[in-house]
Length: 217
Picture 1 (spheres, rainbow, N blue to C red):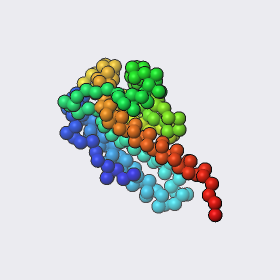
Picture 2: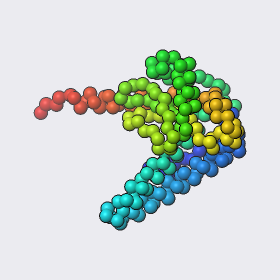
Picture 3: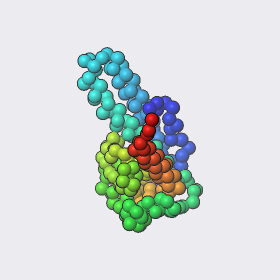
Picture 4: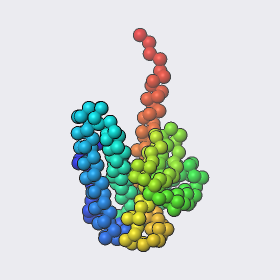
């Protein structure tokens, strides 16, 4: 993954839930993770050129640090993509997204309760992810940037739960921050991400069917 070609979160981004000072601090942190990822990958490439005997231990240590930095980049990008820009109209889960939430959580309100509770328990991140294997949505939490993945699950929503995300605006009132973020979620973007995930599942299913078709000479 060439992060240098990744579009960073725009510095003119603005939303109702977070102040400008908080956003500036957050974007600075995000840019730092991008720089750290680039630095670590350069080091890993240099170690690999030394050969396996010389690079084994250092390379494995670098890989751990790389997953942390890369996880931070992807988590933050997803988090800010989730949020409505200031002035955008409020919306709520609808259409296929609402149907998927009902299927997985029995109702949209129950999903929102579960997401809020997951975020309250989480130390680092809360995610809603779509399970490609089982066709359902689930709320996950983890304490680190590289704390997910559950393989074959695609995150469609992320909430940053680290102190830097809420301290500027909410002090120690973490619950008020979580509630404000949930009020600022852009469900249209989240629905589009779920549609992409379901399309991937459908492609995988079609490929599996094709692989079972007998061929004759």
